[in-house]
Image 1 (cartoon, each protein chain N blue to C red):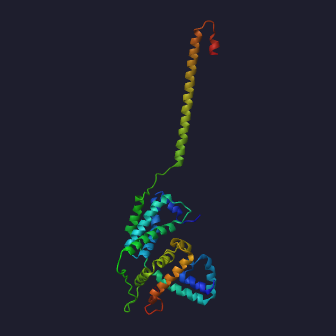
Image 2 (image 1 turned 180 degrees about the vertical axis):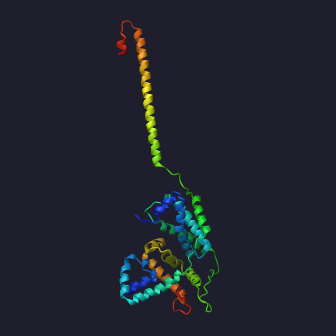
Image 3 (image 1 turned 30 degrees about the vertical axis):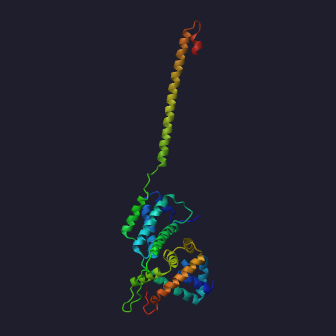
Length: 189
Length: 139
């Protein structure tokens, strides 16, 4: 039996309780939007994915069987699959060169604002290999546990740890100039 | 837990021990208290954590929120009529009591009617016979 903090709310959602539906939206929609945004790097597509994931949650709620899985894990699986579909479609569109995302680095004549640092981090995240990005997004940003994240990625916990290490190493290199002590380091970022 | 393992964990999970595997957290804490090099590895991981935290957090627009709430009704989620079991039981009990009363009234009426008919028939039969006392028929 798996303890699920969403179980009671989900039961009320399944009964069509309007207050429960609003509470579920407040609880899950920001998480799904963040997941999709960080996986896809596109706000419009991220909104579509988050909305579709919630629609599937509405359909599932009346027939949800408690104890088999955590609802949050199930919802992440749905949203991730929707992201995979879109990433696959992108790959199928034949292009001579992938679109280059702006990553200008630190301009020598201006200080780094928090928003600049945020954009740099976002761009560095999007440049990571897909599986490394997934691992970082699930564990760092979505704050899922190792076992849960490994299960979602259908890999072992050891393999997840390896993806996380390589992902963080890639990010550290991409953002080296922002590190404290670097010439254009982001103080207090 | 040794320093190498702690560095591996910091490389993978960052500096926040809450993200580390449950089984290794306590041992890591003990090592961090004892080993300055382990603490340095954690500080390096914390620097990257701080940068990652600067990534913008997407904000749910009011339009998206409203669309998603509206989609619940389209997906078939509507409040169901409240089912008051207590009220149903009360009406059910009252119904059974009324039916029982009606049955008793009907039964008494029917018995009286049939008994009267039988007695009338017996009297007529007795009247048609000679030498039979009414008391023998009617009791």
